[in-house]
Length: 605
Image 1 (cartoon, rainbow, N blue to C red):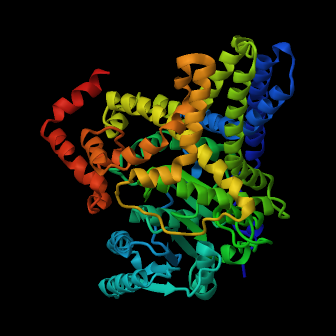
Image 2: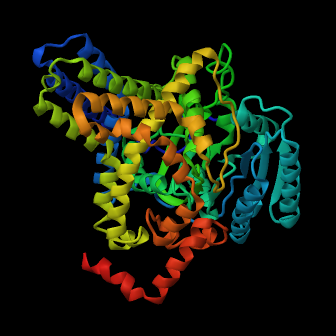
């Protein structure tokens, strides 16, 4: 029987402190949103607000939520980082032997079995060395349907089971169908085998975690019986992809401030990202069954983006959902090229839009309902932005006096505010990172940090319209039955041909060509400086050049967009055959032979 969390021992240490925090956060976001809309209204409304202006204002308002929330998350996160604030949850529990039986679940579907087995073997070795492996079992949960993948999985699982026999049990379980996708696979296992486990660690095929992190999370769960889901802060494994490097660098810079800020106000209603997270098995089995949505796919049927819904259901049951907002040995792989990046994002898009059928579920907490709405708006913002750009350039070209359309005073103020909000997480991270010499060295030093940050800003500005147009085209096809389903990701370095890129990115290319030519006709050469249409125009070159293995290895060797794992990989990552670490090893060797030369610039700034 699942205990009622209200009757669990120990005081509720959170009390009512999240109410005032959430109220303050809501007021800040609301005030900022109103200020942005007011500035745009002032910029457009010199001669009154007409139908064009109203359409532009509506589109602009739809694009605001993620920017505004990201800005305040980052601002709050920067203050917390400078104050060295750490959530109570992050405090190390007393060092005692783990008593909770824990299932480590690796969920795969037609993946590279060798990589999955390698990662699991590293985690198992660490658990065995910790003398606590007897409390854990590893289960490979397969939904594969390709014969060659199934054979490789069975062979890899058998080798792992024999290698660790008598020290840690390794099991393999494959379903004949993939009802409910990954969420259904986990639920089927927990219903059939979950009685023997108190905790379950959920992993994706590309997940890797330090054994110490796994044990730490399990101890935190043991020490907090109200805690239903504990999400680790997941960072990208070092990549030698020219496309992935700026993305992972930017994410690494911005994620800590953003996550700290959001954890400050979300508190016990935090995020669950579906992997590298610890679940309390009993409540999860009893309360987190996903509904089958009415209708046919793409928006009906099984829920694709299961994680946020399961977090909402766990919170509805009275159990806490929290994130551990510290970088603590929890990794995943990022897509190695633009086409794979888009495909992953479109799967999230389809899954998040299914929340339209779940938003009205009874009993959800207000914060959970807000998170579902925000997940929907994350993708509705893309067509709103595309339409905003189209309306803007159309009006510019059709106006008799284009210069009279916008009042430059409020227009420039709005531009500065929006740019600040857009890049706030990265600016906050730089504000915290640059004063810390030891942490700067992990990213290569001040000059490499600034060079990486500036070039990553350019990369992000080019990438954003490509993704927005991809979302818009995909969403336009949903009413006609367009769907992606659940397919494995191409993870290794590989080239992308011009034909492949153009076949997938012709909508972006078309928008870029038409937009730039239209703007050039109405406003001259300055039109080619438009980030939106220029980004769309370079989609194909970005896809092909970004997937060049040679360019990626060169950037890794010189250290551009370096992340701390390349400077000091640590024991677990050193045992991986990652191309990024191999390419960076020569740079580290030079640094180790000349430590004073490496340290001098750090002490000078």
